[in-house]
Image 1 (cartoon, rainbow, N blue to C red):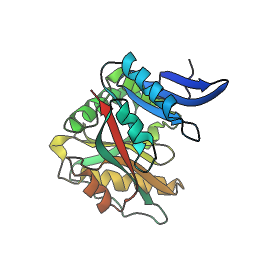
Image 2 (image 1 turned 135 degrees about the horizontal axis):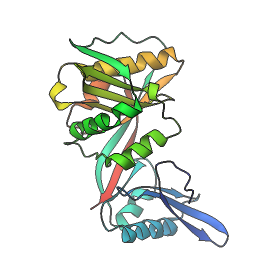
Image 3 (image 1 turned 90 degrees about the vertical axis):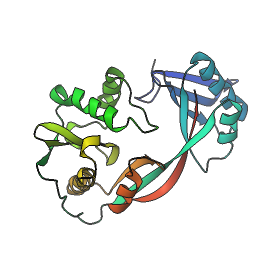
Amino acid sequence: MSVGQPWANAAWAACRGQAEVARLLAQTHDGRFELYLGRPADREAGLLLVSTLAEARPGRIETVVPADMPDVPELLGDAGLMLEREVWQMWRELTSAPPEPHWPDGVAVRTYDDAGDAGDVHALLERAFAANAESVLPFEPWHNWMTGDREFAADSWFLAEQHGRLAGVALCWSGGWLKDLAVDPDQRGRGVGEALCLHVFGEFHRRGVARVGLKVDADNPTGAVRLYQRVGMQRDRVYQVFGRG
C-alpha cells in the first residue's frame, strides 16, 4: 500500500460521500502518526481516525502538531492523548560562511559509509538519546526509514571519530535539514557537538544551501537548545507533542 510518506507504513482515510475529509498516516513500529484534516477542519472525522489508530495499536502512539494549529489539541485530548512536551523548530541562515569548526584533540570528521557504519551509528544514537523523550527505532526499521528517505545522501551524514571510535554524528537530509545530532555521553563537554554543527553549516554553505534547520525538544536534558543558540540558530516555530501510553 502506498501511504504517501516514506516513514509511514499504514494509513486510514475518512470520507463523506466521495470526498476524503481526513487522513492519518502512521508508523506501526513506534506509534508515530500524522493527522491531516480538510478545510474547514472536520473534527468528527479526525477524532474517528485517531480513535481507530488507538484501538488498532494499544501501546504507545504520539504525534507532533504546530502549537498554533486550531482545534487539533482539543481533538487529540478527546481521543485520550495528553500534551507531553514542546518541540522547537530552529534555523540558521547561511548568507555568509560560518566560522571554521575547532575539533577537540584527536577528533576528525568524515562522511558515512553505509556498509561499515550503520550499526555503529545506530548504537551511538541509542546511547546519546537514552535520557531523552525521543526514542530510537530498532536497527532494521531505523535503517530502512533513514536510508530510504528521498533526501538521504551518504555525503550529508557526518561522523566525528576519535581513534577509530565514534564521538558524535550529524545526520542531515541533503536539502539542509539536520535530522539528528548526537554526541557520545563520554565525549560531551569537549566541543564535539559545536564542531559538528559548524561543519554542517560550512558544508551546506559550500553547496549553495540557503539555510539549515532542525527540531529539538525545548527541555532537552543534554543542553542541546543552548548549543544551537550558541551556534546562531533561532527558533521560528513551536510544536506540541501529544502522546498516550
